[in-house]
Image (cartoon, rainbow, N blue to C red; front, side, top):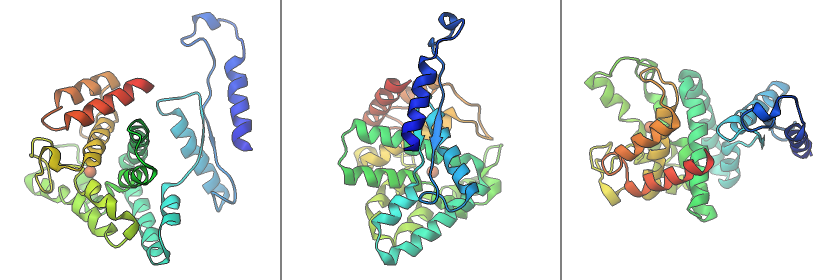
Length: 271
Ligand SMILES: [Fe+2]
């Protein structure tokens, strides 16, 4: 119901004529709306506002002029697992909250990577089961950072060899955290391999070319694209066209060329 009302408001705003309309880029007024509901999606009033704000962020990100309803991937995972794994999922939820508090860059980053992976899954016509696993992997890929000290995650200067070795442990740390959840079994290789490189120079296993899980290769591209186009303590933010060019430059070395091709096709469709 709220979604339909929001959509009606969005359309009415879009069609509203205003003075100077011809000289405006796009020629219309646009709004983005985030929708959530109480008590089904939020337990408290502040949760309700936070969820609607999250959904609004998703609506504004890239596409704009749209209405998004809040949904929580962890809640979807909760519905998929049996009783014995519910406790582990609850702990994962706590871990994610801790990571979000520790590294403010990770929070929105994960959300955007999930968004890209969702677009990729639709473009590739993945089955529902594959799509689900891909989205879970995208959501949990950096959960292993929980064990990495904040000074390393937020360091503006290049990492020392020792710090770098510590950071490189995060894919395996993630696997340790989720390996007792049977519903996430198929997400393990995707998460474990999200820092492997096509030329074999990645970590943790130095896998090469098609030895790397194809969904992991796609996740790597989505993850790197978002890292390039968002502000980090250690780098300048790139524009979307510059980041696309960079993906092309690193295709065949860092990235799987097929994954780059699919990703660029997907992104160019929505930009
Ligand atoms: Fe990572």
